[in-house]
Length: 153
Image (tube, rainbow, N blue to C red; front, side):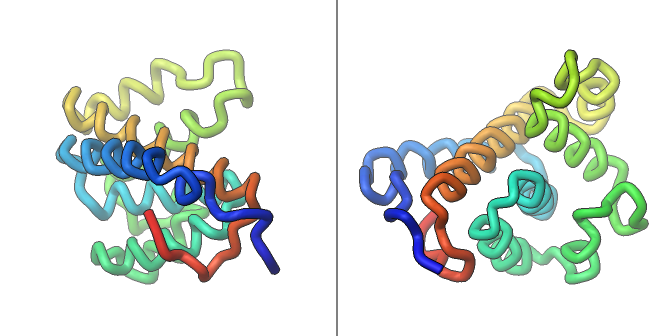
């Protein structure tokens, strides 16, 4: 397999600087690192970004996410390994990623559940994290970045 081109954010380094800045800001929201990593992995699975799934597994392990949780995140609704707060974050991540799947992409029920577990600053960090993950997924999918070749981001 071969990428069509380098990731556009590598080709234009000022773009990567901005993206990394948003990621760093999102981490300042106070959402646990393990939760952010699970969200990144789930969003990347939904979008079919093998590059981000691969890189996300490595990053999640470094953050302390157990293998059983990593293996189960694709079926998190049926798995006992996730807290109520993580479930709320994953639900919000899925709804925010699948915007075209329903007339009300993020129903009040989804938002309210997330807001029950996260304050405004945490929600801001979580939403930024979801958005940047979706952005990276799109950059990587369009340019067909190859899983296992992570060297940035």
